[in-house]
Length: 137
Image 1 (cartoon, rainbow, N blue to C red):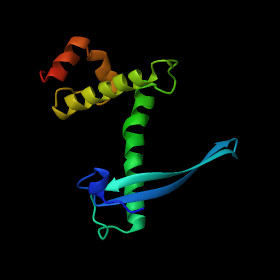
Image 2 (spheres, rainbow, N blue to C red):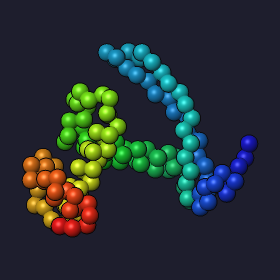
Image 3 (cartoon, helix red, strand yellow):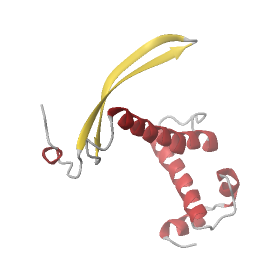
């Protein structure tokens, strides 16, 4: 069934993209589970702007940036995967994102000489963080 972006409530969207994804879970080099699904994307790009392989590369690039930019940094810098917290995992992920966001904000404003989060983290206090959030510092 064809539907326009306006009919779907996504004004400004020029096209919908359906991507078939197959994901295999491996253990000791053997496939133990396979999951298949469609993922749907909307784009503000005109259909003639990019070929299907180019759109696939854009989508892969987006998710790669998400993985490297958020999850990898939360795990490597803040030890997320090693955390034993299970009942409050989502709030903790939010707090870790806040920590990374405050660090990046201070770096962008050139208000810290720390190059990495661990060194910066040792200097940051709750009162300084609140001032930073409010727009001070």
